[in-house]
Length: 131
Ligand SMILES: N[C@@H](CCC(=O)N[C@@H](CS)C(=O)NCC(=O)O)C(=O)O
Image 1: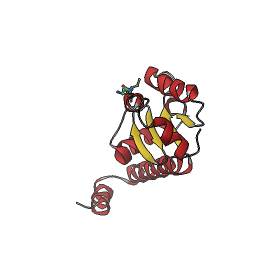
Image 2: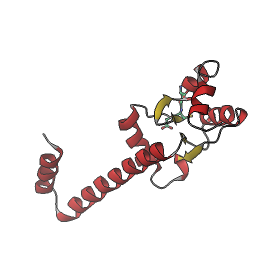
Image 3: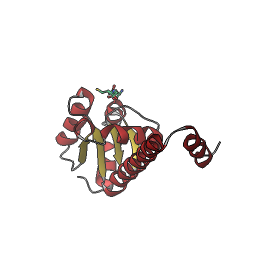
Image 4: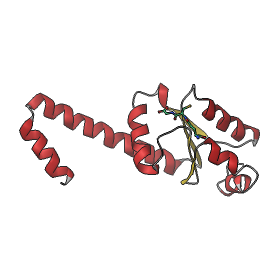
């Protein structure tokens, strides 16, 4: 069933208040998906992180040690953080943080970044002007 058809059947089942809530939820999810994509597109190195996450800390340390410029968003400190995380799961197929992009290329999580440390990580960062 298409998204429009399923929304219409939802509208028939629910009352006006629930319909408004469903529309608001849909709007918030679309806004979060747009924001996530914008962050990926606008930043040479983009790290979606959570402030308490040890893997995220490790990723930030690796990038700091290389002297790389990067943009980080701490999803646990953002009002729309969980909606952004949902959007990332759809965009990248990855739900966990850190979720790392370099030059719009999905790198993966911390273990993926670590695996490239002795391979092409420096070259990747140079290519996008981060170092
Ligand atoms: N193998 C992954 C592990 C990442 C991981 O497990 N992250 C935790 C946070 S420390 C996570 O995303 N948990 C689910 C969540 O926070 O929603 C990596 O190297 O990045």
